Length: 119
Image (cartoon, helix red, strand yellow):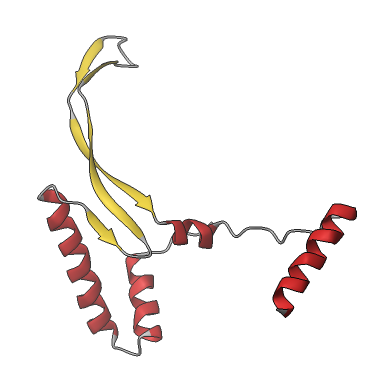
């Protein structure tokens, strides 16, 4: 699994969209800034066909410093969460091709489907 950098995404957009790298960089930077601004404002950002970014809050908790074994307080904080859409999940995890079923019931079901298509 490779990691793709922002500059590689800009290169791909400039090639696929037949625009200059400068224009692609401006578009990417503007999109990322818009997403960031909405998240900072506490809003969800939904990109149709891709997924939804949202803010997830972690409660304050008690932890242990591994070096001193001393108990410490870990403050509450906000993280960015992402939930992929069904179409993105399906693109990442294609379903295997189903093998035809064997037996009398399967043959009967297949014959019924063929007859229904002919009508």
